[in-house]
Image (cartoon, rainbow, N blue to C red):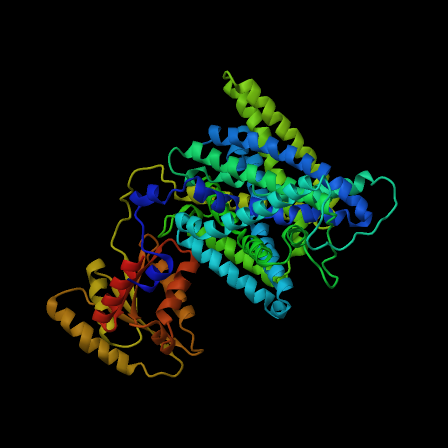
Length: 638
């Protein structure tokens, strides 16, 4: 096995794709990790906005959470219908494109891509941030830990969808299990104590601030912050194609499991936070504790189970980026198939995953982490904007879909999606207004920029298609043999091999030697006469001529370009073939010992853009047997 086989796993054939499909148990950690982990920071985000209210703010957290869960329920039923109507996947992009037009689809795709990228950077940053808060000595290694985590998640996803489900399954179910136990114990204690919460470890007291009733603007901002808990709901509808048969049923069951677990966690955390008097704390002040940390300590104390629970929370927060690695490449594949992204995004790699999409996501997320030094809190306001923009377009698209379908249940389905469209649009407007100053305005710049890229990629492909389109049959006029040029430095085995090939192409062959500086060309002429002209005359073949071009300024490419232009004027209807001999080394580092003139010449001729000039490469392999063995190993590893 090659090194790549050990790192990424052996190649999988296309016939093995069905074996890489996932079921419900794997689908939850792969496509639900983002959504489920948001229960660890969604309620805290909402409570953070309510900080100015002190203890009074706790009175609003349960109603705000209930409103968020109502919106989540609407999205759940809407996306169940989307999965059924579009079993090939694609989510918001496909729905919006097919029902609202390509521009609406691209808008949904741009918003989702932005959401996926931010999820990776912010998720990893949040997890490592929580780890650093538990172990302050790691603070100076924050960025390094973030990048290491990103590399691990990227590597796991490059190994294939099925393996990522196995690897991420344990921390996901540990997180769900431990937090469920904590919430269960907390609710039971609250009921058995007659509605009185008696914490094992009392949370920091919240100040009593008498301001009467909270303002509507503050509650809207709290709601907007809490909506970050729903950013991962879209992923399942994007990844229907990843599920084993029956794909639609498995995808719907996975969506159900994710939403039910998420709803329970969100409501349980909000309810117990209110019951135990747990509020958000200022992260910049000493002694900061997250809402989850306070809640677990209040319910079970700071014993072994506390550290197991907090450990699973930290791990899941850190790994929540995995949902983006499942959804982003598939979304890019669909956009690429429509010609709005480079086609490489639509190509499956060695493990039947979309490597280019995975690597692009990793690189962009890595750049964000580096730019922000591993602390990406300022990006959080952008989170919900992209997700809810995609939600709204998807729901509106489904309304149009059911209107066209006109089936028995189309009316009911249209009402469900209509309610979803209105609800998500209202939520989007609230989020934009509430988070505009905090950074949501950047979305209004980034999304159009992504759309600009889409349109330019599409324009390029259309331009290429127009240029290469051939409306006529094979044209045999002016089909004389080409004029062949063989540039060479000196008489050697490379030159001999290139000339032999050139003589098979055309009777008109020209050897070209550029005489650098004050170099004596007499030796070149003598070698040409002895080694080329004499044997060719003896064979009765047309004798190639030699052109020695002086270059007093030691340039190589410019004199050759000028000579090719001169030949083109001399033979306006003939193709000019430039046969370039090139040395191929056995090891990459040996290339550092040579000047790579052949490579520079090829690049220069390609960049000239002259359709009358063709470039032919004649390689000579040093240590041919070793090169063949290396090529064979590399071929086996691809």
